[in-house]
Image (cartoon, rainbow, N blue to C red; front, side):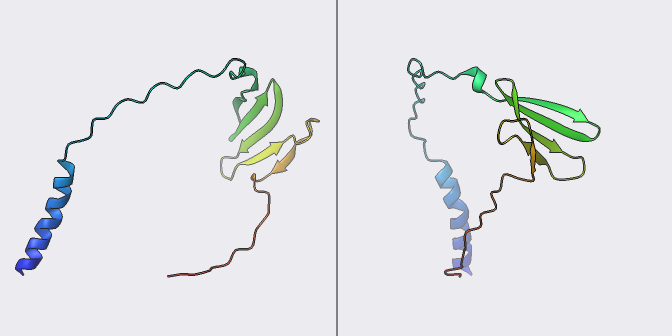
Length: 112
């Protein structure tokens, strides 16, 4: 019985002792250097997202340089789906997700 009590007291005391140790002298991380000339970010290449409400659906339109390339539709009671302009010709095809459908074979090698 004494061993059980001593073990319990030790289990409680160890985390307390670990927290009371002094922290090492930490120094702040220096600021990153600026990008090299000519390698700055082009704001025209950043995607612009417009969020619209159409009835109970939420529609997000994604544009780059003013050109619409993807639409995400989130119905009020369902999973979101995407309309994507894959060729850039203005014809959108529906995709339920960005899953390619490729399924590599997988086997269980070992379990415990």
